[in-house]
Amino acid sequence: MTSLFDRLVGAWELVSYRLIAQDQSVTYPLGKDASGFILYTPDGYMSAQLMGAGRAVYASGHPHAGTTAEMSAAAGGYIAYSGPFLVDETTQTLKHTMAVSLFPNWVGDTQVRISKLEGESLTLSTSGPVSNRGFAATPIVEWRRARRNH
Image (cartoon, rainbow, N blue to C red; front, side):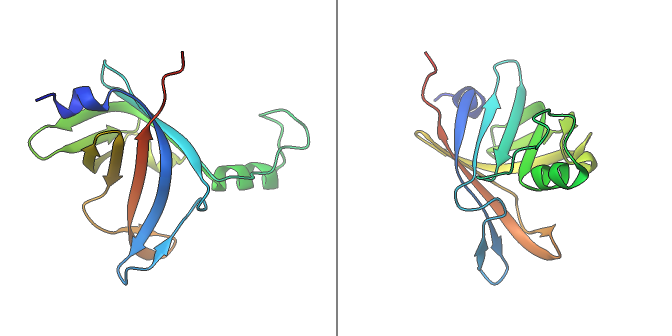
């Protein structure tokens, strides 16, 4: 049987990012129509980029010259981090180490992801609720293998 590591390698496109609260209510922090990719490389690195649809453009047209309000809104609708990853084949868990992150609190952090990989579908979650905007919820992120780009 092929290892989880080998089956992960490649690009995955976001299907859904949702939070399941302890009362089982569901919220979509970036909206139901969020988009994104997660990439796993053969040399053990990963990158995740998720964004909400319809984010406003900067009036200046320059990535470093947005107003404070424009930059705040843009960051509020985006999740980005990259770094090394490790796979525990026995438990089917991943460890994402955030070498870089849009959210500065994650830089240097390592987070465990529970994985479920079936065919072309990958679901990542945490082992339980995490604090999010004042309430506890479990993030569930669903991906599908991206089509080859050539």
